[in-house]
Length: 320
Image (tube, rainbow, N blue to C red):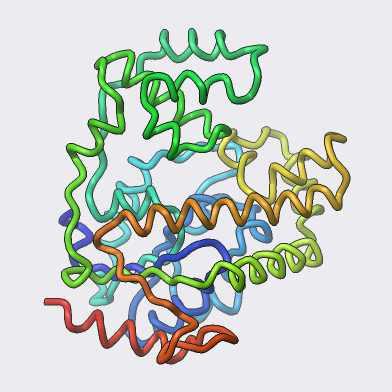
């Protein structure tokens, strides 16, 4: 692990896997403070669609890197690592443990293994490729990446324009795919050496949880939340606008789909996000996968959060 995070604990899992409640139970057992590992929870005002902890949950355990930036701002992985390191330093200076909780795979991987920074930005290239993409289909840039760096194209969603352009930029500047360069930088450790726990649900149960959570978000006022964000003085950042739950509602407001269609798209995109997250976690040797519907952690009806928190605590304390 990267030095600042050696003594940290990590709880991750796909969307709707129950990380928030379990994270609070585990933090209470550890005497820990929680550091969010969710790229969307950073945004103020994006509460319902990101399933942020409630006020009651936030009051039970100190949380960090939540509501950190405005919705019109961007937040790089490098900046996240810098702020996470400062946050952990403060937590440990208070004699507490840092527990990272969240499901953003790139944040988790960067915390565990560091980050391939690559060459400085080439703004002439970025402006040129943006101009070339203008007027073309939404997946044109993704197709350009697939020609020179298939592994990166497989990993990145076609709507992840910022990272696609960065991958194309690295290839343009260095003549090598960013996926190849990242792999050289990619040295993992075994799960037994780490305190990294990934929640895993059977797909059918997880899909039901996603559907229910989406319905609850609509009931709690997701549409009004998005209206408020769109009415702000400054437009949503590209990253915030593409967040699952937000982009579908925006499409509805722009007349691209009905509300029922938007809701079904949120559920479909959330299922797809969950699959991508689980693929990432399986690829990280540091992750210890917990089948939460299997004894002793739960049963076919679901996870026993109290028992799971106890199990994680017991397993994590065995790490030297």
